[in-house]
Image (cartoon, rainbow, N blue to C red; front, side):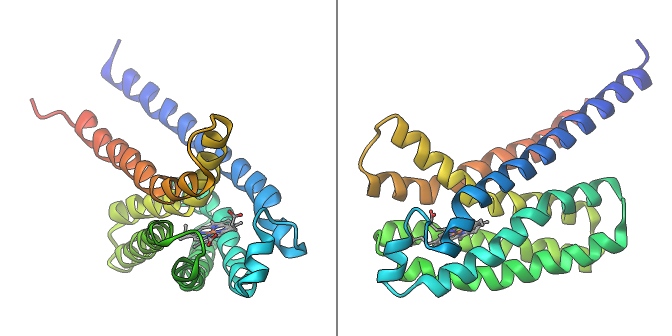
Length: 217
Ligand code: HEM
């Protein structure tokens, strides 16, 4: 088999995997928003009472309203960026994505500091906020410097972090189903695992692809 034939298969299959992953992310994001985020706007969120009692509901609604914009735009944005399609729309959506995260991250720092779940939980979510600001900020800085490769990588990391709260709910749901620990322990573990583990896996894939696609023999 010729090397160009093998390269075509590899390229074709990676496009297939990329499109599948982005479509799945968008579907899961829509499901998460309908099941866990929208109910807070009519007082039916899983922890609505706690947010009303502590007076933090306006902050939560500002957070959810802006975070769901980023969650929905992310997969479309990454697809446009990786395929080079509809660049003017890509630029417009990029501005909306960054602005949504800028506003939402301010609210998440406030919610992390004032949480009633405990300081280790708050610190985990403040870590998630910091990873959000750094990854999105570097994606923006890279495109301003016309460094396209770094921009692509940091946008992927930024969206993995945006997806962090979806991983958070999955982790809490899975540990609850397996009856692992108490609720506060499950929430606290989730606040750290939901972003550190996905970022580690993403890094292994991003760097691993470079190692295996360009072996130095
Ligand atoms: C990626 C960065 C994010 C950070 C740092 C973050 C942080 C937080 C914090 C600190 C809380 C309050 C927790 C508490 O005190 O109980 C919270 C709650 C919440 N966030 Fe986020 N969040 C992020 C992304 C998102 C996204 C993308 C969504 C999707 C719309 C979202 C939806 C929610 C919901 C629905 C709640 C209410 C609590 C629950 O139902 O579990 N968050 N978030």
